[in-house]
Image 1 (tube, rainbow over the protein chains, first blue to last red):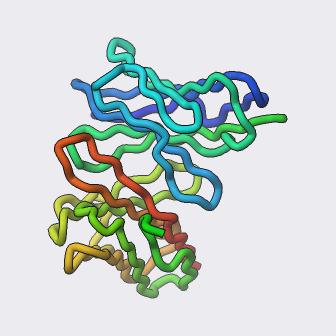
Image 2: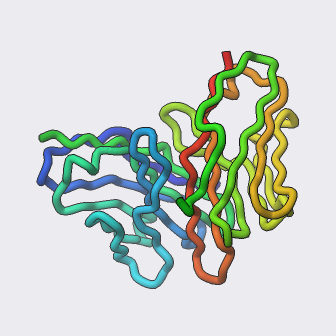
Amino acid sequence: AQSVTQLDSHVSVSEGTPVLLRCNYSSSYSPSLFWYVQHPNKGLQLLLKYTSAATLVKGINGFEAEFKKSETSFHLTKPSAHMSDAAEYFCVVRWDLGGKLIFGQGTELSVKP
Amino acid sequence: DTGVSQDPRHKITKRGQNVTFRCDPISEHNRLYWYRQTLGQGPEFLTYFQNEAQLEKSRLLSDRFSAERPKGSFSTLEIQRTEQGDSAMYLCASSLNSRDFETQYFGPGTRLLVL
């Protein structure tokens, strides 16, 4: 079955340190991959998306993700965390053009001063 | 604001009552999606429309749920005979179908509490 797994339900970092949020997918072929962020009481916002043009994808607010087909991973990183990065992050896959999104369970990112 | 809007933002109802939610997509978007998100979980797909046609429904969408998009613009999601298990955030998203990998833009959601 096609699925997406976020390996950590909660990640805590200090402000100014790197962020790594891990995501693996299972599929017999390469899906479309996305990272969305959800701040408390706000809607889901797209951070970045993988469209097969480049394996390293840059998104908003300094985030980036690398698609690794051999590892079926799409981990999200940021070199230096900011307090405003504290939110819930979802790794998302889609297996057909224009179809439904399949969300991971989410990773809550906490940023300590 | 030209984003996706949803109304109401919050709804409290008693078990057994019917509720209806509305979603207004971004104006030029021809696809509209409904998702449900329960506490501590990621959103789960319910159904989607291309223009006025409902193209896919999840098994999560029981016969108490019905969605419409009569003129290919706004959509409504109705839940009949609500149950406590229906308590969740109901999210709407819209996108423009194109040859490129489309992006779904989400509204703020309608939070439903069934007492």
